[in-house]
Length: 143
Image 1 (cartoon, rainbow, N blue to C red):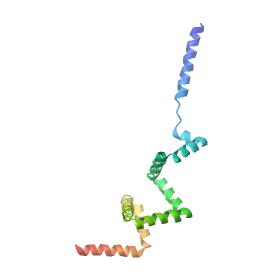
Image 2: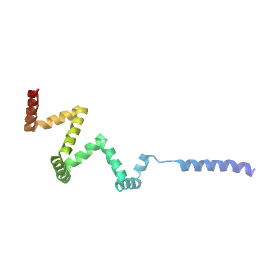
Image 3: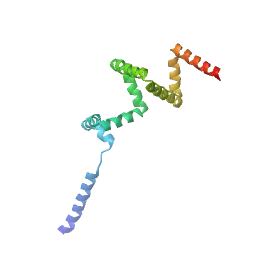
Image 4: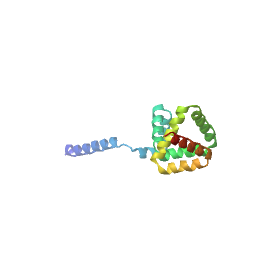
């Protein structure tokens, strides 16, 4: 009788242990725990490959890009240092400038709202607009 009773109890205990060992936490569950989240973020920040992967993911996400740009524009220390350094790099390096302008044109091709925003920004720089108009009219004259 004891043998008949112990076998089902042993099987039930084994099945319970198997299910307990196989339960995996989802990413959201891990991030809800403050300590685990801090460990995960620290692990990403201190590991070059993970950090690079995180930056690429953030740059491919429109809301993350907007948040980062907002922080650059709002934080005076970042705006002064990073924006000035970035602009001087573009000013001194024509291939970087060309790449940046190309990316801007691609952005405008893909999104009419961003194109409209750029056109609005250009209105406050009439010398640039006039210079572009002159270049276009000179190009048409050669044809």
